[in-house]
Amino acid sequence: MALKITIAENEAEFDRMAAWQIIREMLVNPKAVIGLATGRTTKNMHLIVGDIYKANPFDTSSITLFGLDEVTNVPREYAGACYTMLKNEIVEALKIKDKNFIIPPTLSDNFEKECRIFQSELEKRGGIDLQILGLGTNGHLGFNQPGTPFGQETWISKMDEELEARIRKETNTPPEKELGGITLGLKNIMHSRKILLVAKGEAKASIVKEMLYGSVTPDVPASILQLHPNCEFLLDREAAKYIT
Ligand code: GLP
Image 1 (tube, rainbow, N blue to C red):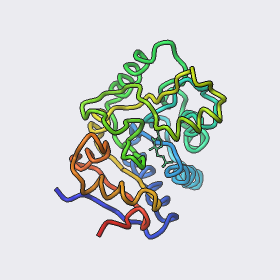
Image 2: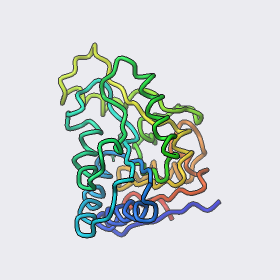
Image 3: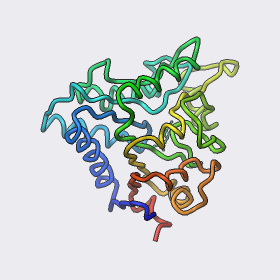
Image 4: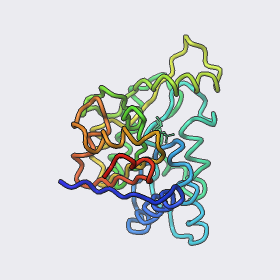
């Protein structure tokens, strides 16, 4: 099966192309269930979605936006919590109702239960129409780190050491308190009707190549996307450096 790869000339074009995909999904399907990813890659595209919407408003009252993953055991208002990032970057700008913005909680005394609630909330809405995915430099998707089984459903994973160290510092979380990442599993991601994986910048170039042309293996969670029937890979020139 040929992979669908789009290479944007530069970062600005990359952000714009991704933003229009989100806008398109909402216009084509006013009841769309759209999964979002946070991070440096997606921030600008989210802001552009808000700008496009402001210039061309439309009814978003039946759109569901959800966060693919969330950091556990930090306050939801912490600037690095996915809830806060998504709210500020895109959810408020699109006037999405609170009940239509779904994301696992940052705090809970039963995260196992929160995983099941999150997943069944998405199922009740008919499943995922469009899932936007970032890419970790180690090939992770959401918080599904290398080694995650392909059949994994929503769960609480470890985050990578670098991110954990940063969050600990920013939130003053002591070492004895556990930090984790609650995330949609690879199985749920694969059940999305459409996927847009976005990767930009030179730091992602080698993992992009592995994801697209390496073996399909849990060692590189994103490699599973080679098997998805409707996945587009949007890259900028730098991330596509090793793609001929
Ligand atoms: C974190 C998030 C992922 C995201 C990834 C990429 O690990 N949990 O959902 O895809 O970062 O981040 P960035 O775009 O900053 O490289």
